[in-house]
Image (cartoon, rainbow, N blue to C red):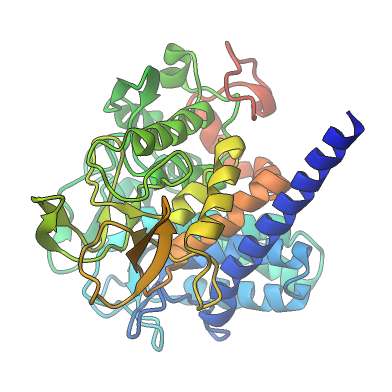
Length: 461
């Protein structure tokens, strides 16, 4: 019995060291790809890439973790935070084609040198919401009475308050995906289960231009409930959809009207969908190489190519960047380690096994940021850039690996590992007034919101 306890303790220590290493390497991306002048963060390591406003949101939430973990000095984190908040608070909001934003929203991608619109991209409502989540987290963390801390909070409030969510509804209830100065609003809105919960929560609680609860109700009215592998789930194929809002929203034990009707909650649903992905890989209906109980992770990711080639004597379509999903696809044999890691708080018992397996199967990228963003053991073209070889079932297999790293992969690794280890982001955002108010206006009840819930299915493993 004593030996068993020692083995368990040793494994726990090994897991903690493994997670600490992954988390530290993932944060290194923000150390190397953030402008100290503007706080803007490059979207990826690919040469010539713009900055991403969502990447800044992830970075702003990573800095407090870096301070508490001893990777960054407090005053350096505060300086980078202030650089970003000053940039966005002072940014052009005219809606100009070469501007920065409009109506409080910001263009999805910005040129890293000038901070102005890149690629003729859209004014993005969801990427602005992800930025705002990091902005509000910074205001929670830098809570002292110093002049710099007061400035962090004042600028955070200024940036959040001027976002005109009602304008973004464009005459309807659901929020539009975006807007372009050349053509106006994009046709599609945030409908169907997707990453937009954080968007609607922030829109409901906005101090100046809040939306009515009908906006949230319209969103949930389009949800797709399915039974998959014996599990009842709110379905969305890509795993990131079940993770992004959860980075800042502690939803275990909380229910809105939709989830109360299903006698579950969003945290439990993310756990179920994590298991669905694992089950899909174990079943492996398309016979892709490497898929098993410890090798899964299907999400929006880089891929080997965009075209059709021969695989197992049939034509198989492969993709470059696309939102992969399970079990209904698209799927081309591409695995994203970060997607599995970001599900750590939901299903640690299977995610830890996968991390250990991937450490042996593919190891870490030589770039120093942890695992490769994605890899594909079924891609048949060995001449492709980014190929590495490994052993699968005793046989040598050469795999395509992504040559780039992405901010929107690295941030969730840092943040969700921390939520698993210490609950730091969750605990701080529980005390964020807009988060609490937005959840309440969306109709959530239970546990830490101070109102009883009918059930509490989201108890953490």
